[in-house]
Length: 91
Image (cartoon, rainbow, N blue to C red; front, side, top):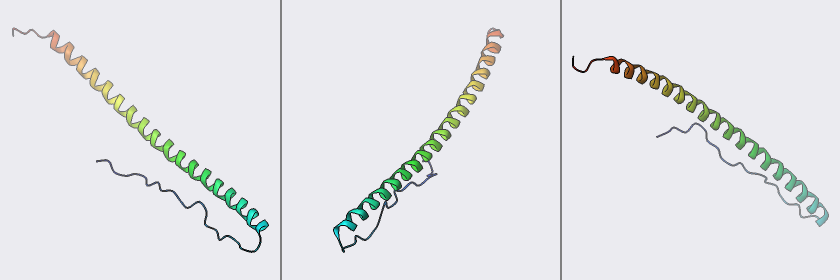
């Protein structure tokens, strides 16, 4: 079972009390709230993309390491086959 290397959880986008004095300020405040929420959403997507990039980089490194080990084993098997083909089965 693989161990968890990263914990990625969504963060709260925006908590803000809505003013109750007049509607003009309310709409201006809602505009700023939506802008802040959008910027925080983009920041979270950016962080998620960084985590995904890190995961894929680790995966690529593991695949390259596995490929190198397979090439080494294939070379050893080839040398064993050459040695075995040179032996006389009657001896």
